[in-house]
Image (tube, rainbow, N blue to C red; front, side):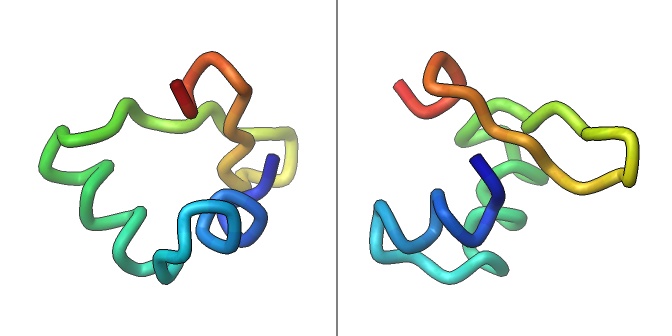
Length: 45
């Protein structure tokens, strides 16, 4: 899932998810070949 899809699913902005990731509240999303975050179902649990 992209950061946009995750943010819509949890009703958060992408910036909020990036912030949570940066301070360690949520695990870092993997990056795809283009360097974009690629969240898996496991990282969303």
